[in-house]
Length: 112
Length: 110
Image 1 (cartoon, chains in turn green, red):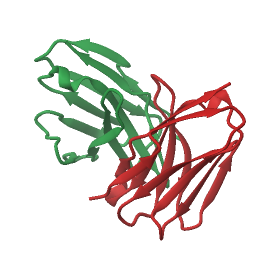
Image 2 (image 1 turned 60 degrees about the horizontal axis):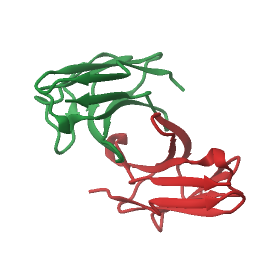
Image 3 (image 1 turned 180 degrees about the vertical axis):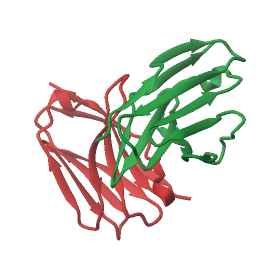
Image 4 (image 1 turned 90 degrees about the vertical axis):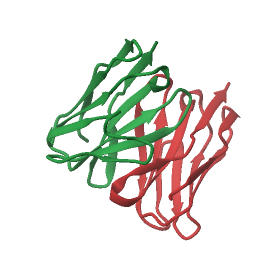
């Protein structure tokens, strides 16, 4: 399986600011995704990061709030914009290769 | 809309006992995943089930898939403390997007 790294691993931010999370995969992957896990909850898909084109967002998530980039087949970023305490969550990137889907270590975000 | 129901949500077991976690889903899918999550950690892939009747085993865990019933099970045999974690099933929808169950918090007591 590909090795997935995320930066930062955790951060504490003030409301109204923005944070960009980076996801790096050690090999080229077909598909990359961004998920959110709110405290004590399951995972919810935010968007599919498309290489060279705009991300595909799920219902309830919009580009202005969660802009995503994927400049190549091994890297993606997710920005959480104009943060509020409700954005406090773990954000995980994921990659799909063949039939498997693996997750990065996650970024634990706390918004004060 | 694909919905995934997992039960039980909480499971407290004694070491040495057997138990089963159930995962029901609402629409046809050709791919079902089981993951383990330890506190403060990311998801560890346990099993991928791709076809009706698929059964996979790793150590004390065995997963199966019945696509006709839209049901997957994760069976735990002779539980040990190290199995304590949260277990998620996830079902692949269109474009490989995963819909997760709410998770089962498993606690194995000595």
